[in-house]
Image (cartoon, rainbow, N blue to C red):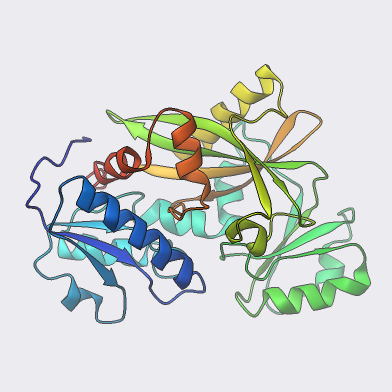
Length: 312
């Protein structure tokens, strides 16, 4: 059951930083969320920069506001620790976090849903990527299977570029996902929950000054234009994209909050991935989506805070 945490004296651990490649982004998200919690009256909210000593650091806290990104924080690991310690926490649980952190297994879970998927192959550590992509059409996107913020990603146009791209991706994960490149534009949809029911935010369309929506475009002001509500979709495609986002969220077992990304071509959305702990920085997508729907930053933080306990 979703509920409002009314005890303003509750001790809330804002979990951020951590040990992943997305550490700096998470610290920025955590700082913003902490400031919002203090404005909301939760004066006993404190930042915990997650380390291997996290179980000691968490002693005495009533709730955990999880704003970790990437490995150990978005993959079910910290969620398992919190389950063991019986500390209610925000966002998705162990299973959905673990599934959605892996782009390949997310697609396998969604395979029997209505959500349109991009043609792709999964390349294990010792497999030859050129042999695996024989049934795909260039250009291709090469991605570490379990990374966020576009770390290790590359766009390639021929076999000659593929090995270097896979080598780059394998610096982050041994296994790699290779997808056909969709020549279109990027949109993202937040999924929140109210009274236990999931709903989609307004759709955010992103036009970048880079070739694709890479790390620099995501986190450097001025390199991306946010258009929200999105204007590049027909009314029918807009509603369908929101429907697919909620379906992906629910099919993957997500709870509390997620953000679902798509590429759009010829007015049709194609699923990219589910982010189970969306960024909350000044340039992040979810706050902009929520704001377009009348939910300001502080109320967004409160809505996510209210998801603590959904996993119990």
